[in-house]
Image (cartoon, rainbow, N blue to C red; front, side, top):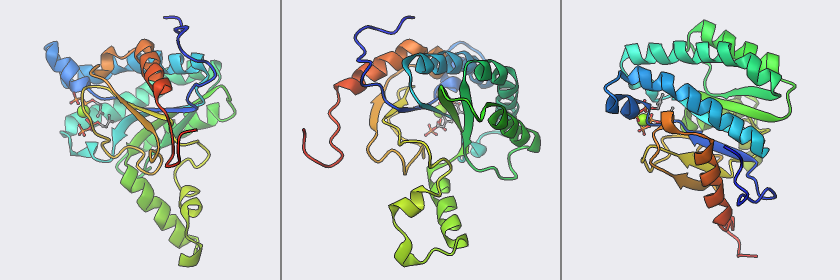
Length: 240
Ligand code: IPE
Ligand code: IPE
Ligand code: MG
């Protein structure tokens, strides 16, 4: 699908963050297993990421596994760990060839299998110098966990309370180099944040739609950007 001419190419958000939600419901509706829905989400991710790349979006963050998703049945969790690992293995070379840097936001703790962590590292290293776009996967990610981890680093760094300000916290988030998301897209009909990027979304524009993630394609990204371009961002100030 070509980029709609109605999109203002001078007002492309720098950072778009998407919640890849609705896989289970998509599968259930077709009489499939929930895990088939996760597998079907791969095509959506790749199409949306290439749509983002075609627009010149700098950072495209996708929520792949939350710190709360460990509450799911062990079989589903195991599937998601293996699936994300195999997705990385299968896709990293293609993404690398297309100039995409891969990054990860989340806790690299012991619950994540070691081979998954080493695959993440491999993809990061392979693509570290790519400049066209960063595909940032929020994996074992929680917004509260990220803030807790930043506070731990502050303490480990011996920062005195007098020196604690927003900059001190921000610089200890998982990827302080990324601009805050301009736009957050939550599909699947849920109207909540689910612990996504809590610090960074303070002034993000939120767009919701009813598409279940496996059906999501770049045209849904384009639609969300059109909606974003109609918004007036004020950041607490007055309209200009
Ligand atoms: C999103 O789809 C994928 C993950 C959370 C890993 P869900 O699995 O949450 O699908 P629904 O919301 O149950 O339909
Ligand atoms: C958010 O979706 C997490 C991911 C998409 C990875 P959830 O399905 O986990 O969110 P809730 O539980 O409906 O809020
Ligand atoms: Mg869900």
